[in-house]
Image (cartoon, rainbow, N blue to C red; front, side):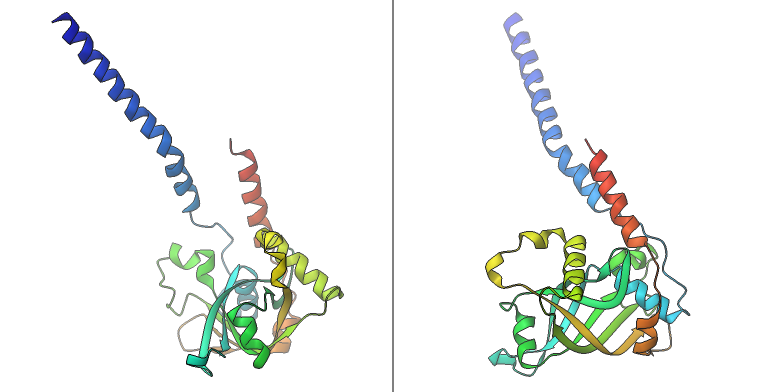
Length: 237
């Protein structure tokens, strides 16, 4: 009986050790998921009655956009074709209101734009998680969506605007620095011709392009948000 008791104790010890190992092994993943699924915390957007500040806020706080072009794919030539593109509208501390892109000629969008430079850029307030936090569906009119239509222009290398835009893109999207160099990356911007925005009930509003670009947007929420995240990553064990 004595050896049976010893065997039982050993089995219990092994079971406990295995359970503890599994918990420690998967615990880091649970913690990581908990951290990455927390809502993004940024200051609330402007009041919906302030059309231009709202439009500039939504674009400046968007990391990516839906870019619609006219497809040249043989099966759907002439059809609208949408693609996801990383964007900035300037550095985190200097918003211009102009969307900038880092593109490759190998991409769907860039190929379409070589034949027809017309495009529409769509960004949504949902990217900040504001709508989710306030229980608003992304299609809810109060969940602001901004549509910028115009013509895409490739920036000339080493001009002041090119250097500014590329630095801003790499600041917001550091992974771009490691994109394959043989993909012939270039910087492009949208020359805005029309601005439409849905930010409340009652249909779309149309914002004069000149007033939109002239507005001195001084929001630093994106800079503060990234600085806060970088600080949190620094102090994590």
